[in-house]
Amino acid sequence: MFNKILIANRGEIAVRIIRACKEMGIKSVAVYSEADRYALHTRLADGAICIGPAKATESYLNISSLISAIEVIDAEAVHPGYGFLAESHAFAEVCEKCGIKFIGPTSEVMRLMGNKIQAKKEAEKVRIPVLPWSNRGLSDEKDAIEVSKKIGFPVLIKAASGGGGRGMKLVHTQASLANAFNMAKMESLSAFGDGEVFIERYCELPRHIEIQIVADEHGNVIHLGERECSIQRRHQKIIEESPSPVVDERLRDRMGEAAIKLAKAIGYTNVGTVEFLMDRERNFYFMEMNTRIQVEHPVTEMVTGIDLVKEQIRIATGERLNIRQKDVRFKGHCIECRVNAEDPKTFVPSPGRIKELCLPGGPGVRVDTAIYCNYTIPSYYDNLIAKVIVHADTRIDAIHRMIRALDEFHIEGVKTNIPLLVRILKDHDFIAGNIDIDFLSRFS
Image 1 (cartoon, rainbow, N blue to C red):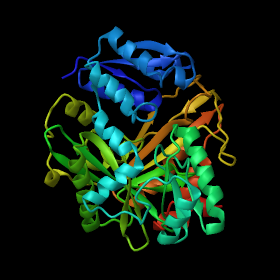
Image 2 (image 1 turned 45 degrees about the vertical axis):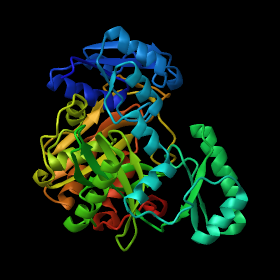
Image 3 (image 1 turned 30 degrees about the vertical axis):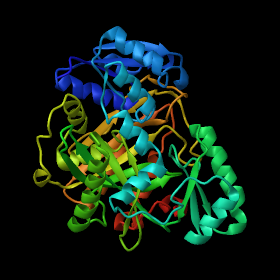
């Protein structure tokens, strides 16, 4: 087991990893930017080291600063969390060359799955369904038009790198394709430093369903069921749940087997998520793979009883999985709501000092957060300030419990999206499970 781990992240995920380390008897060292000098993760860790100014590019995204910090504190491993450098194959490769254990998959696998074009090709190799697509990156408008004619409109133009909806354009007609294609390329280049894009057939009103996999370094791979992630705003998830209202045991097995097949084919290790789109007939299509812990990992933890962060650390030390697929059991229903510091109507970020704070509690309620009373939310980073997670015997009980928990969540000094979350939870279509990734665009 490791003696000391550096946590290359901030906020609630850093706190989450610190807590896992403490329970495992591992020393943890936090990194922080000048804007995070008084952040909670710096207080909870066994040590903390400043890695640069407030700008993420000069601190949390600065590979040389992080490597220097690891060497100064003499850590054996680094946990990247999610976001920042969590899916940077360059960071993982530097760690490998420096003899530092990167708690995640190898840099080679990260490089492969970080490119959506290559990821789709790998899925096709093992006969996992994908939507009709260009089968390659596209170089110019003429190329894009010819491909779209063969696929059939409407089509989606997507960036080969990155995510979050950047570099993505929906095109309904040939007349609007050229402009959308050039805009997608420019957005992709600006956001990810890579202007490569591809085209796939548009799946109308799909669900976004992902499968959690866990893989050790000895070839053992299991899945831990699905998470329904269809409630999104601009391709950013805000509510996740497990199990999905439309996935039965047979479909879960099929999706899980597909995810395991892909993981084994590419030599994947540690935890990861295989993401699918599902159409109205419950056909599923591979979308991408996230090679890291997910924001919504607590949803899986609550229904399976398996601590995913501890599993990450154990796998990184070379341990074999101590659970087989047939031993995985799913209990009850879990929902997670992401609480963001933002105006619930305009979605404008709302950083600032928290003047009052009362977090929810009670049976079946978990809150993952790094905020506290009088803490000042900085304006430099993501505006996620808390995740409220509830577990109950049934989906309707979980919905009622979540509404109760959000009602208890009292915060003064900044605005949050809690009013919007409550409205969604009380919506008849949401309660009935009639949801898709465009749910919020129709929500009033």
